[in-house]
Image (cartoon, rainbow, N blue to C red; front, side, top):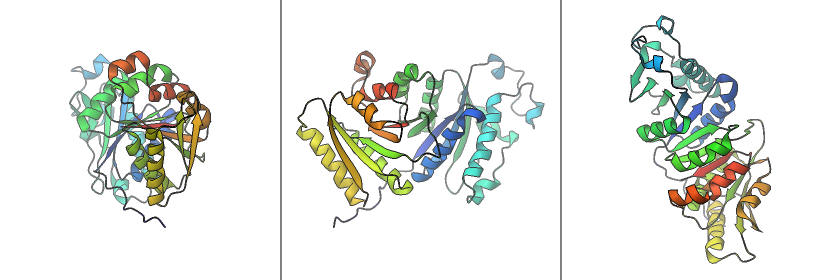
Length: 306
């Protein structure tokens, strides 16, 4: 019997969940809270709205005692207030979180965004932030400022236009929840090749599988009938790692166009995990990459690990 390894000794992680409205963002916030608990990560929630020049004008006094005293009510603050209430519902056992209130006295403008100050919850921070401007650019600024490891965003009707920007310009890992259904039973599908990010994506996949009990599959795709030493070695590494954690894994080796094969195999019942591309930014811009093309062509949730 293979001896189990100790659990992954990760540094404290910080995950950022982007929300847009109560109507559309509940699945994203639900999964954001779930995945943060899996990794024991601190959690941030960000609303990125359209630029409104009057919001930063002298007519708005951020020191007023009540939201109703402000000259305008920014819709993003209402979304963040909803997000806090929703997080409490999603974590009913967390007594410390239950005691936290959305306090208008604790709303500050700093570092080019609006921040709701929240006390630590059992050693972890919950950040509520409002930004204005272009989505990817503002998420990038927030991730860089607070050193977030992962951005979690909902699917978008404009995903084909956003895919390139999300993957190329956000500095951490990215989880895009396309057509995510919290009630659906998913399998994890790890795309395994000889890229340097494969090892980390396998680690993340193993931790998710352990905590959530989801079945795991790995898929290695070669353009020819020959699977070279790099691909075979990566597949063997992944199998050995899952075995060491006591996690059952199904391995698949297919031949064909990598992206088309990924998409067809994933269908609509997998959550895809893959490593980020190692291509330089210019080559990604000119030719795309496997993650970019996969995100454009599939409708399943996809985690791209850096």
